[in-house]
Every structure is written in structure tokens, then in C-alpha cells.
Length: 273
Image 1 (tube, one colour):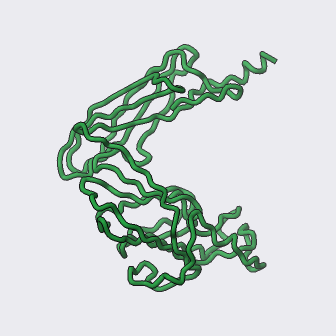
Image 2 (cartoon, one colour):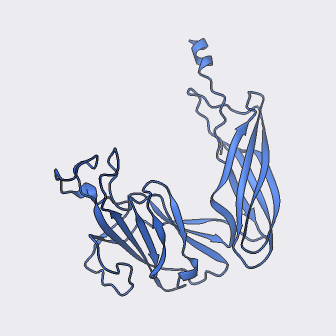
Image 3 (tube, rainbow, N blue to C red):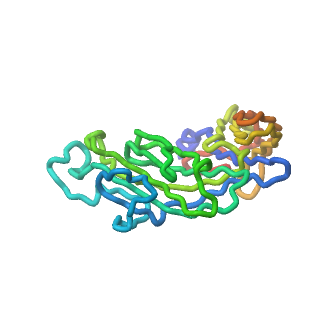
């Protein structure tokens, strides 16, 4: 039995790198807010559904995630792998008050997934279209936000071509939505990448790459820190200085060394952060 256990040992160091940014002694954290609540929904197409002046008082109020297909009705005409449920078109709208002071900050709306062919507006400004229904994406709201006032996000979802999958997909904003606020100089969303190298019971080397964005009109200098922790202990720290021109994106790369790492296997599925 011990022999079988040793054969199952997998030399994998499972990790998530925590990265942070220090800019001229200012806090440079990422604020992530739940944006799932208090949406309005209309099943069907409607002209100018993104218009601020549109009266949506008769629309259905709901919280996300939401799938209108699962609500039916069932029909033999809805073939393929939709579960005999309808596709079609739906509209979502949400009003919210933006913070009064947004100076030096960026505000993004992040969707974990919309099925499918989604189009998004902020205060009637068209942000873009995403045909794919599974991948996460985000839009920058900052240029069109009205600080301290009411703002409107509108989303059109077009699943008219419902027989488009070999499994049930549903229809609508079926995953979470978040509002993300960052400083103008920040670590890019999904901008931290890492891979383990030279893994053994004695040591491991982690290669880390961090993408940083400067969305100001000035040249900036910053420090990027990477922390690797295990339970309550910090086992490796790395830092790099970076200088960025106005509206520039750059990446830093470094390696973190771990002595006698805890190796993951099916009997001991330990995780680093």
C-alpha cells in the first residue's frame, strides 16, 4: 500500500501569487464590489433599451445570476441541447450612484459570463459586444460615469440562435457581475501569471510575471511586490521597480525560491497562496 501511495505522489506545487503595487506611498488596492443586485429584466427585444429616458418601471426586478431559458416554456420546437427550452432576446438594466470622488481612479464592470452575444452600454455609451458566452470580460466605465449621480448600465443578450451547443447553456447574465475600482496605476485584471519550475522535495523555483498599467498622463515609478504564503507564514518575497510612461503597460518578471516545499498530492492536497 505504501508503494502505491509513493507512486501517486505528484511533484506539483499548487500556488496563487499575491501581488501588490506601491506607488509613492499611496495605497494601491483593488476594490471589488458585488454588482448582482437590483437589476431590471425584460424578456424580448425593445427599441433603444439602453436609453436613460426609457421607462422600465414595468420590467421585472431580479438579482443575478439569472437564466431566462430555465423558466420555460418547454416546447418540441426548441431542439438541440437546449433542453427544449427557449432562447430569444433579453434586456437587463441597472441604475446605481457612482462615488462622488473618482479623481485618479478607474472603474470597471466585470462579467464572469453572459450567454450570449451580449452588448453593454453605460449612460447610453456603447462599450462593446461579446459573442462568446463562457469567457469573462470587463469594460472601463470611467470616462462616462457621472460622479455622485445616478448612472445606468444596460445589457442586451441575444440568444436567438439557441441550437448552438451540445449541452444546455441557458440564456442571460448567468454568472456574477462585479464593479472594480482601482487607482489609475494598477496591476492589470488577470495580469498575474506564475509557473513552477525545478520542483523537488528539496527546493522549487516559481516564475512570476505581473502586468502593470499606467493610465495617467504622467510618467510614474512604482514597486511591485510578490508574496508567497503557506498557511500563516510568508515563505518568499520578491520585488521589482518599474517606470512607465503615460498610458503605458509593462510587465515585470522574477523568480521566487522555496526551500523544502510542501508538495501536492491526492493524500495531502496542500495549497500555497
